[in-house]
Length: 412
Image (cartoon, rainbow, N blue to C red; front, side, top):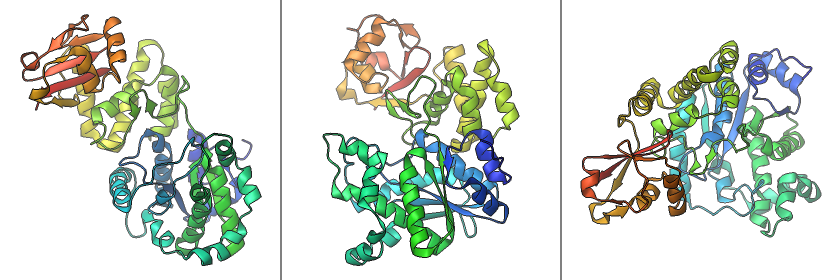
């Protein structure tokens, strides 16, 4: 990049690796220098929690506020009823209003950890406020006439669906129009001049900019972040066990801490810049460590990220538990607890691994045992036919596979 941003926000975006594309970098930079700007990122309420894949853009909103601007978290109470088809192989399941509101409530708990909400501070809005009451014919006449179907069909997110067996429904096809209308309404109501999102949202963002310029002749901008994959090619936040959730009720602070502690060496420096607020120079210093010293950098990464989401006490407790489990062979007070009903016992050790979530299937459980990684209360177990009964569980049974996966099993 030849242009060197002068505003604090864009300087952070470039220096720490958040920036993928911007519609007009210099004009946006000028706007940010001349005063506070309002920006938004939209989040459809498709699950009860956000996951690690959302965290990069949440950090962008946090930096946006820290550099003197006003962020908006736009909850998709309206658009969730349609579902974003972008780069999906099939249609999302439709949720009713109660489920959508429940998901919004769960997601809001995460945002409150990163942003300071209030008058003249961050705003949390719901696009159902303007989408639910739309008159269909008026909307088609006033908004739909600004969209070219030919152009909409040219977007990669749409073309990828048209090439698959699962067809793109007319309901989903309307999503990009509704998202574009969100930007128009946010500009009209809140002078919101910037939409941010992942690079997969580029087409949707451009639609909103074009619509707002046509209807209100507003100078607005779009900015995207890169879609992250780990150094081994996995999508950020995805694992064999599913998404890495940000709500503590869906993923314990200890397991969240472990997710970051288990980062590969090659990812540490990049993750420190994106997911912590440590100075860039310190991130580079830690990333340059090698051998066993890189583990110290991973612990710092895990502590910093966990502190932002769950608090310093949770991070310290997770580190202490990890040290006890790995270095001293103890049970660890923060291990995720799995309760098994007494009348469900006895079970085979294969079934136990599947029930605790350490293995995703009986086949995987047998493989883990065959590889010699299973321990019950730190004792190695090699027999897949072993039966686990109430007496063996007692007051609590620590189930471990390798150095990374641990559960505490109790009878409930």
